[in-house]
Image 1 (tube, one colour):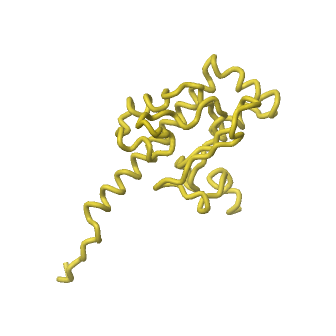
Image 2 (cartoon, rainbow, N blue to C red):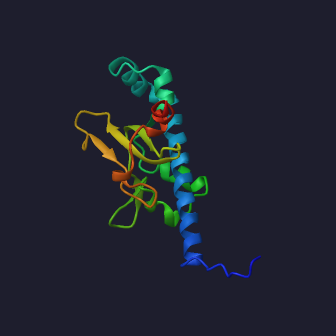
Image 3 (cartoon, rainbow, N blue to C red):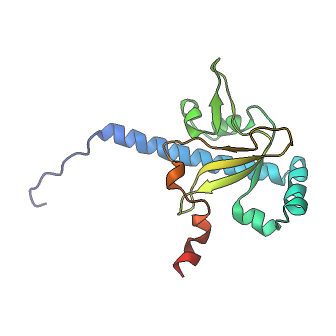
Length: 168
């Protein structure tokens, strides 16, 4: 409008592709959270619900508010769900939800674990923490690896839940 040229962002197409990948990673974590919550609510999740209610003394309201879920002991149930929901296969390992083995096969990172979503301050889920449910299961706590959307040192767990109260 004023005759001043607007410079192109460096990387143009690369920047747009990177933004698209980040959106796909966020979408994958939304799908995973829903999948974990579905399994916790299923008949197979009754043992985990009992653990939360009886051993940890959590109310259903708290479980819902925290978005807790359960990763069943399947090898690739989440991987299959992500593919079904349109998450591109080449991006699966980059989500941190799927691990690529030396032979090239891919398996769910989290199996038979209580799942705790980790969110940005605005609420979008960017990672998970998984707690072992069996005594001999190691490691006891397994967290998502750092990804394009998750940097552990830059994320404060629960800020999305307490942000409004902190402002008060």
